[in-house]
Figure 1 (cartoon, rainbow, N blue to C red):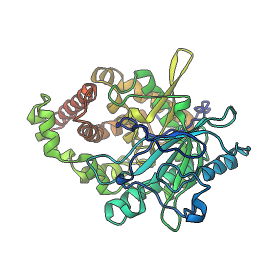
Figure 2: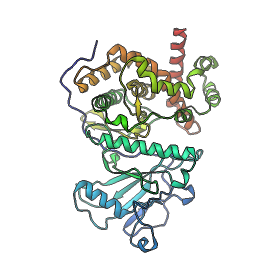
Figure 3: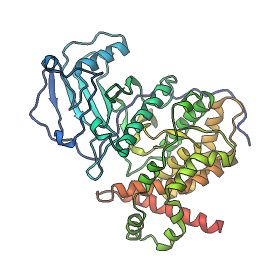
Figure 4: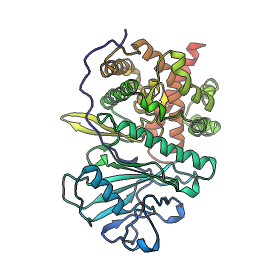
Length: 431
């Protein structure tokens, strides 16, 4: 059955953005105060994550005295207040009380973080002004001299490009951006966005998502995909993800195999599935599957993990309010997002019992939002989904390995184990 044409459904409500929360608890308060600040939560400078940008502020001795720098960056409070005022076309109190806190920081076991994320909370009483905003800045310039550092800076600019496109379509479940500065002559940049945690609840990546939230997320992602099919200017701004990205996802295959075998996964599963734990397989599937399936590419979000989903209650129903973190967005197959949403966030029973209806629901919403001769049929959606289940399995195993030393991770491990078994069964049937 083809998509066909029909009247478009009312699009999802506009949404706002917060930053991904850190798996590391908030840092202890340090007795270091800024002039109008309530308190600031600081991380010592030896993490080497300060951002330099003379285009954002002038940190010379002559200007230092009257400027409040946000969290080891060269972004000043005064600059931020002016950007908010410009965006909202509203006067801002000159010296509001404010708090700044770090929402992420470089991982202890890697040399680089893609970006630094901080929240600034204000003490003003004006309901027309945001109570807080989130800033993302790229890794420090002195960490971008080698290939890995350059890669992370490119990923930051990728997210900026996507945000510039999404702002043209305010009903997308994308961040509400206040200001974007991709670079300066020093190579720095910043994204200022609203903080959706004011109104929404961040979901737990270990627990995953409820079935009703998954249904709504598929509806929202169908709107993103349909919009990207109709308005294709993003395709000149967003490149494919490089093979090195997929190598990072896989990590060490032997370590992954050893870990899951200790979780009672039979060794034979990995004998049959080893071919999927390959950067070449992941890169080829992500970039060439649309040609194989004979369908156009969409803007893929790439990271529909529960921790990037914020929800709110509408009556008795829980709805998706925002999907954040477009760092890994790229041109590709719609089924990558669909397979990840279903496979990453539902347990084995929910996935087995509801995949068919979830795919039909995605098709229904895609057709209505596309409002024309949609190029995807239900059968094609099913075929593409099955193609990307191993893709989703490999990336979920990578997420398990990234938190393997943390407590309270059993539901996530069980979801990964069930995906391994599903992919093994599919492979045996195809032999």
